[in-house]
Every structure is written in C-alpha cells, then in structure tokens.
Length: 199
Image 1: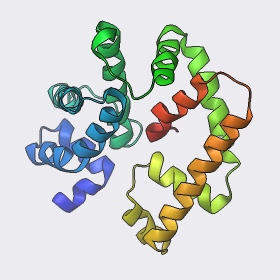
Image 2: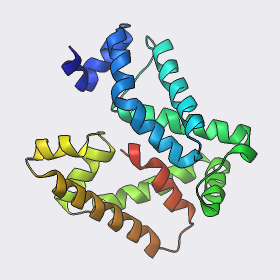
Image 3: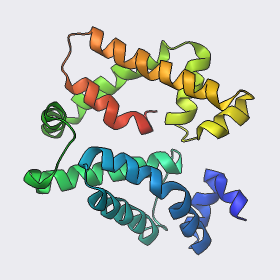
Image 4: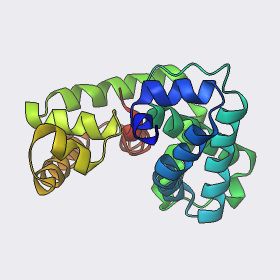
C-alpha cells in the first residue's frame, strides 16, 4: 500500500478517506523538502518547521474538503509559501530573509496586486518554454511534478548526473534571461519563490 502512495491520485484519495498511513507517508516523504524551502526564506529552521507542520496538519484536518488539482508536492509548496507570507506580514521585524534586496523584493510582492505577480510568472513561463526540449522536460518534471533526480533519471533512462547537469543549465539559462532584462529585481525573487510550483 505504501508503494501506491507514490501516485498522487491515490495518496490524495487516501488522505480524504482519513487513511493515517497516507498522513504518515506525507510527513516521511514531503516534509523535509518543504521545510528546507521555507528555511531558505526565513533563515529560521524552527519557524520553518512550525509553518510546514501547521500546513500539513491543516491539510489533514480539512482533508474531506480539499481540492488538489496539481501534484500534492506543488500544493504543499504553495500552502507553505502563503503561510510564510502571512507570518511575514504579521511581524516583519522578526523575519530574517537571506539578503537585503530579497527583503525589499518580497515587500514589493506583498504590496503589489495579484495581476502583477501573475504577469511576471507568465514572463518566466515564456523563458522556460525557450529551453531546449529535453532540458525543459527535465526542469518541469522536477519543479512542477515534484520528481526527484533519481525518479527523473529512471523515467527518462538517463543518468542522475545528466539530470543534475541539465537542471543546472536550465536554472542558469533562466536566471541569465531574467538578468538580461531591465525589469524590476522583484522578477528574480518571484522566480526564486515560485519555481517549486510553476505550472
């Protein structure tokens, strides 16, 4: 049964049905990666853990009502990100982002309207579309579908090293394209904050 939880549809259905093994699987296989992501924003591991624990608990508590149309990993990344933003807005003074320009850019994101963010995300999506086909496929499998490098390598029948190389080139190409423009620095931050669940 645990093996079946690797398939999102089965995992989501099991969660909705109150399957505690599915809940344990979620913690065992998704928790650490999302904490790592949130810790990159807060630079406070305890706070990152608190945020992610609350997100997963809230998912479990409201399991009968949840509607997940993306991957479960994408859903959790989004939920954790928005929880982080809410915490940041509650007490800006206690938050510690990695760099001063990141703090400024996040403030811009918080204070700007949704259309602004969506416009920049569409711009980033266009850059991703310009990646070489195989590189784009690997990037999407990793960042949108939430697959590990090992899973991608197995699926595409290539080495893990090849996946690592292609991901490195993809990220370099995307960031280079963003830097080439004269648009606001916040676009780079939008990419860094949203890449785990770009669709």
